[in-house]
Every structure is written in structure tokens, then in C-alpha cells.
Amino acid sequence: MGLIGNIYGFFGYYNHSRGKKDEALKWYKKAEEKDVTNPNYQMAYGVLMLRSGQFEKARELFNRLLVFFPRNQAVKTNAKINLALTHWKMGDLDTAVDSMTEIHGKLKNSRTYGTLGYLLVETGDYEKALQFNKEALDYDDTDPVVLDNLGQTYYRMGDMDKAFEYFKKAQEQKEDQAVTLYYLGILYQQRGQVEEARAVLDKALTCRISALSTVSREEIEAKREELG
Image (cartoon, rainbow, N blue to C red):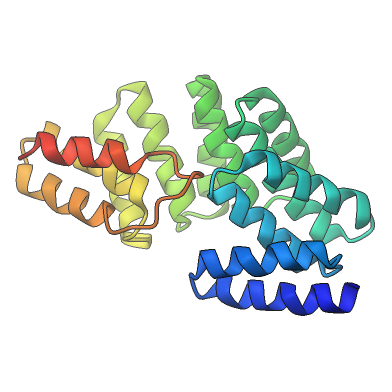
């Protein structure tokens, strides 16, 4: 059964990597029915569920990986990070922060800095978030997620000049990050630079926006309509 499941999983992964999500989902479901054993295909299926907003299914898949691959450290770490994101999206921010804090204590890289850095912003403890995200900046001052996290921290603290500075740096590193462009649109509008605001919001609407995004397409569209 596992062989057929892995073949189906490969087709799912192949289509997933090419942006054909509906086709990928069809194959992932078939792979699951045939007891797919490759953890990479199972992880990818879980990520697709997470980005599609199917959080219960995503949680099931990530927990399954933790049960069946306890000695595969890479699989275990990725499953835990994705599970933390699932907890956050399901409204359990405390569990998400605790999980990511534990993971980050054992493995410090751009992904753990970026994920935990944003979750700390979400807690509302902006001083703690600022301290952590400055540490993340020392680790990698070119990572667009780290830069965006600092922009969001300063934005929520009311320091719009600093927020603008870091959102601009994030844009320079990754020009198709919808959340960065959304906040830049707000800040350009506040500065009276309406044309610039329209331009970045138009660009934001061309970006990939999933259930994991911290800004929705509707929010971007509403801000863009406000500008005429």
C-alpha cells in the first residue's frame, strides 16, 4: 500500500510545487487513502491544508508525523513549527508561543526567529517583541520576515517613521510580500503620498494571499478602494 501511496504523493507534490493546488489536493487525498509513508509528501499535504484554512486537517497531519517519525529530527522540527502555526490560526496563541519558544531554544534560524517574532507581536507585549525582533535582526538583517516583524512592532507601538523604515527594507528584500505592501500603503497614505500608496496596494493584490497571511485580500481591497 505504501508504494502506491508514495507514487500518488509524488504526483501531489509535483503539482503542488507548480502551484496547481486543486490537482495536488486530489493526489494527496489518494496518497493518504493508500497509506503514503514518505514524510515529505505528508508534510506538504499538511502545509497545503494550513494555507487553505483547513486547520483541523492540518493539525491531524502534523500530529501524525510526530507520532510516526519521532526520530527524524528534521521532520519533527518542521511538524512542530507548522503545528504551532496551526494553534495560532485556531485561536490558541499561548500554545503557539510556548511551542515556538521551545523550538527556538533548541534551533535558532531565520524561520524560528521569523515565526516566533511575529507571534510575540500578536501577544501585544510590544517591548518583548521589539527586544526579540532586534535580536532576530542581529542574526539576519536581510530576512524579509524579520524586517516585516520589526515594521509591524514599531507600527503597533506608534513609531510610524521606524515602521516605514523597516517595511521599506522588507520590500527591498522581497517585493511580493502582501502584508509589507499593505502597511506601506497605509503609511504612504498617512504621508500624503497617495500615488505611492495606490501602487503598493495594487502590487499587494497580485501577491499570493493564503489563510496564513496576516492580512486578508478584503482588507487590502478596502484600503485600495478608500484611495479611489
